[in-house]
Length: 226
Image 1: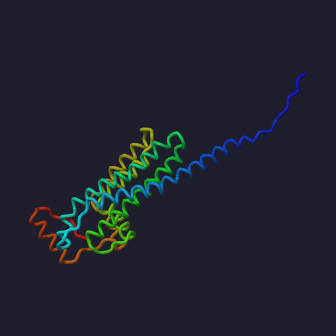
Image 2 (image 1 turned 45 degrees about the vertical axis):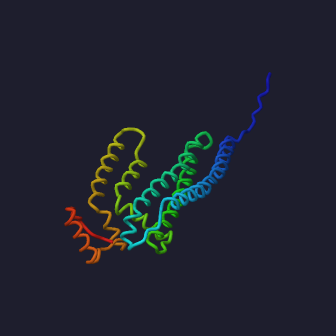
Image 3 (image 1 turned 60 degrees about the vertical axis):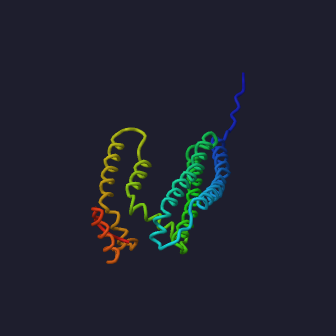
């Protein structure tokens, strides 16, 4: 008769080893973030130095004449910041699983965007001819979205929450997104910003200037704030 021998196996050991391998590979891949920061910082700085030129005259004239140059810098540097993230996402497809790959991609994107904003802050300081700290510039960029482009918040939030299947939840989310888009167009997001003091009513001098421009162009703003 044969003899049956029972050997105890740790079933959890392979999964633990796999998790450790993924963690180690993720930490190695995160070095792509500082590399993307240095690459985008250098490329955007070279672009800004080549495109943006010093202009004499009052601030309004400098702003008008440097606007096309600054737009070129913004568009091209944004493209430069997206390239490393796309390369990381598709390049790591066979190396890292989904969540780890997304983590590395977002880290690379954040580093590249930070490099881009550092250059843009320097460009704006050059145009305004006064120091503009990076923290102040980032604060401006943070408040710019809910003030001037609240629909982007709704679009990104709905895209992140959208389920894979077209079911009742997807329909409810689509209707909620549509309602949020309509509400965002009313300027309701300005209310908490006003309460926090981020934006405030414009002084009489600014109001008079805007009203004169509105009378000339036939466009009447609903509110004037700083």
